[in-house]
Image (cartoon, rainbow, N blue to C red; front, side):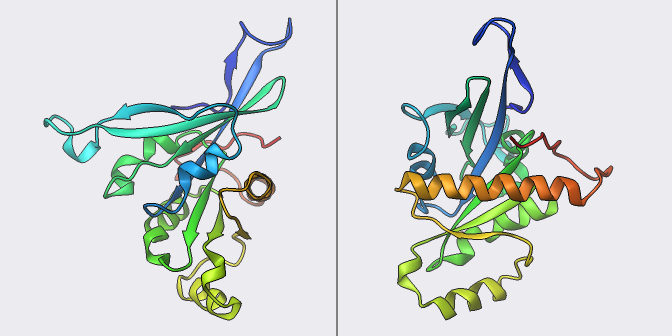
Amino acid sequence: MDYVGSRFPDYGPPGRDLTSAKVVVAGGFGVGKSTFIRSIVEGDLLTCAALPPERAGAVTKLVRIEFGRLWLDPGLALHLFVAPQWQTPQAGWNDVVRGAVGAVVLLDIMRPADSVDAIRYFEDHKIPYVIALNNLHAHPRGDVAGVLHAMGIDPIVPIVNCDPRYRHLVRQTLIALAEHAKLDRWRREPGPGDTTPLAPVC
């Protein structure tokens, strides 16, 4: 599932290879991950199946992984993947996240604990991410600031308001991620502990 830097020489304008980048959308169950992607991509979401790693080798139900594609220009495609709802992200997300330029963590302010595992995963793997607040109308602004402070989120992480049903808000969230990922790349030198290569953000 490594889409960063993928080449498609048989398509597009003559003499020009097409490249693609990947973004992962994560968060708690029912927070709007599929809706987020569906609001911005062309066509319906595609699905692939994967075996939960903690049950590998056993007879078990396959997990669906949804993704969609957005053409940013004739030579660059953005693939957006829904992070699967496995019980332990550390065990099941590596293949999905590998090669991503960054991630969007959708956070329902009424259920902030549901997104903690995703936030910790991206922090531990040094993957740039933004937090997109959904269901913001349910909390006073002061309470929102208190919730985010209690979660210990790094102040450099962008916080945006995003109702995933609306394309313009999804677009603004992806722009915020692109800018943050670019700054993150400039801010640090790749180290031996980095598990995910970061691609240039266009």
